[in-house]
Image 1: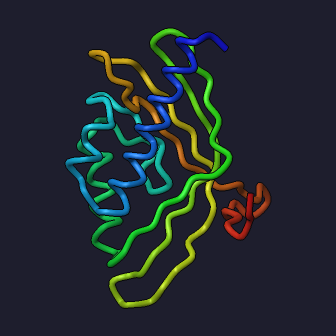
Image 2: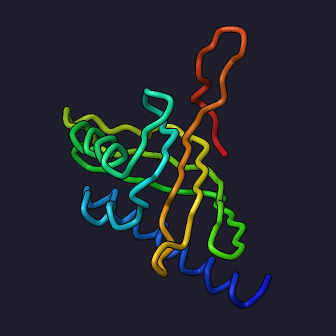
Length: 146
């Protein structure tokens, strides 16, 4: 890996840390700074595609309305960086305390991030969250651990 790629990956990882901090603090404005305006998100919630930063922030606002306290963790996140684009993949889990007071451990999901360097900053231009599916029943399989 080149020195430039190492520096870029370190910056991308700092931005991912800011994403986690923004989620834990339920700070939509901090999250806004991390996404490209033309973001395309294949989130876990319907529809199949969410377009634009406002659509992504609406999803996070929905999460914040459900959770009293939010925790988000990432595991096994790896990145490939080249020029002004980068992608990463790993596992994520949203957990915390629901508005009802009930604690939830959440579930592990697969996460993929696509970054673009825009105006000198690495921004999330694409993300995807998914769970494996039982092809016969069409139902998601959510009890897996990385």
